[in-house]
Length: 482
Image (cartoon, rainbow, N blue to C red; front, side, top):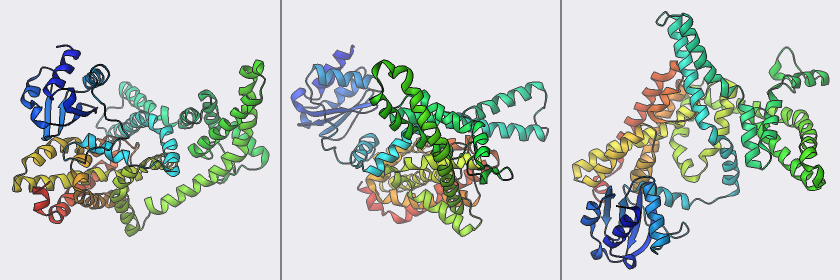
């Protein structure tokens, strides 16, 4: 059956084009709002070649599962060639439904207001988000390299030539990205701010160049005894300085292009822009942002690396318990620069393991709801939870959050409270990771080897606390009637 034939067959079995009020697609399925449910042939849809499944929990809301890739093709044929009306993002979305996490997520995201703060956070996040795969690769390899070194030191692994070569290749992967993070940040920032990406990379590279120390010494700003106390030194300001430096470069470059004669623009605009931006970056931005970065790191360390167990535990609890509400508000992206600040200053991240417990709390809450749903006979909720829990344990929380706990609301809150106990534990134990994605059990791959057991214990605590709090806080009738 061709795509055109399949699209026509779906429309026919849905009662015809006139019976379909609106149609929209998600990652794997077409969602339709139906006028007359009696005209829909659900059995026929399920039996149609190419249809992977049909969800018809509500008579006027039919979902036809086609799988990734094909769904977009069929949707295009239905709306562009056969005249079915597509539901626009600006139109009211259907109410949240248990199990339909993709539609629920879309509805939640559509309600987020793009305030000035959120827009600024999004710009920062968009600089770093494409670098997450590199963070993951380098983080996992750094953790693996440390483990291999430990095993070689205690004699578990041989220290022959082959193992040394393998170890150093792994270490090379771990260091290759983080050693030049400033350059990659400059390139990404330039893309966001609308200036040539290689010029942005030059700003990042300049911050790492030893010539900065030479300039600092000439100005009397260099402290040879305690380099970190220097007014200016190589690497000062870190990624914060690079981002600000590239933003200034973008402003200058725009002004230069505006006034440069067209015949000279290609050859002279880049050099003029750099001749203005580089002194400002080295002599002003790097010292100022270096001071700011040190201040931020010191402030974070008061909470994230506190020796006071009460402060440390409370910090971990609050971080884990409030992380998912931050996600719903779109503010969680603002944590990415803090992850990288910790990574630069400490060689590891204590912030991420704590917030990673948020997903574990959701798993625990879902386990409690599963037990209750089985007792009260809500087979549909059991089916939804059973399909979503494995993904949740691996750090893919959307099916649980948007498909189960958030539509019910109370379990979303109890899950957060349960997550707080896991966050408190990992913060008390000083668990550190070398990357900030993925989360869930997969995060153990980039947690430093000496902290893997504590991370897993913290995850189990979040599971248990989320389950216990949810079990006693959510009445059976809420589960039965959902």
